[in-house]
Image (cartoon, rainbow, N blue to C red):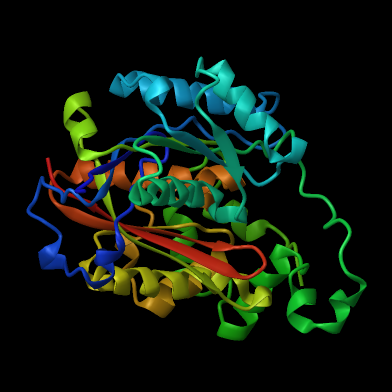
Length: 372
C-alpha cells in the first residue's frame, strides 16, 4: 500500500523508505511534491535555549519544557493527540529509568492514556534518533501518526560518573576509551589533525556562530584550555495528510548512523555525512545548508575541512557554540533550524543535519525542502 508518511513537530524531521538508498537528485520528485512512499515533515517548533545553571529555564523541569512544545506543535497544525500512534522522546540525562519524564509531559499536554510513549538515548543524537524511530515505525506500517521529541535540562541533571562497569574495562583499549572525558577527545582531534586556536578557519568558524549573548571571539580566545532544551515531531499516511490538511515542510531522503574510534568521537559527522549522502544519491555540492553540531570547535572544523564544505553553507544561523547544546534536544533543534532556513529561502533545496556522538559514533540525515 502506498503510504505518505508525515512528521510534524518540534523536530520537524522526516524519513524515507529503503528505495532512497538508490535515489538520485533528479528522481526526488518535482518541486512542491512528494512520493506516496515518503516520510515528510509538516511542522517544527522549539523552546528558547537558556544558559545552564543560571538561565531563564534553570528551574524548569524537562517535563514542563517538553509539554510546552508538544502542546504548541499539535495546536499549530490542528491535530488531535488521540490520532497519534506513538510518542518518542530523545533524552540523555534520564532519571526514573527514562520513562517517567516523558509520560508526565504526555499527560501535562492533555494527551489521552491510550497514546503510548517512550524515551530513546543515543547521547548527542537522541533528538534525531527519536525522529528516525518514528519514521521507521511509520514506514513499517505499525503506526500512522507519531510524535518525535527531544528535551534536556542541563541545569537540573548532571553528567556524573560512569557508574558500575566491568573490571575488564582497562584490558581493552576501545572500551577504556569510551570513558575518556569529551574534552580530551576534542584535544585528540586538534593534535592529530593539526587544528589550532590560531588557525584562521578555526577562528572564522567560532566567529560565525558567536551569536550567544555575551559570547565573543575575543572572550573565547581568553579562555584557558579546559582539557589535555527541546523538540517534537508527528507523522501519518497519505490519506491522513490530505484529510488533515497538513503541509509538507521537508522530506527525509536518507539517514545514517556510524561508528568511529571512541577517542576521536568528534569525527563522527565526517563519516556519517558521506554515508547519508550516498544513500540519497547526492554529493556535498548538492547540499544547500549543513547543520553540524559543534560539540567542540576543533571537531567541527575538522569535519568541515575533511568534507570540503564551503563555510558559508555551515550553520548559517549559528550552531552549538552560539546557541548551546542541550544533549537530548540538539538533534531536534537542528532539524527545526534547518527546515525553517530552507523554507525561508523559498525554493527547492537540500539540507543535512549531523552530529558526533559520545563513545564514538556519528549520525546524519538528508532532507529536501520541496519548495513553496
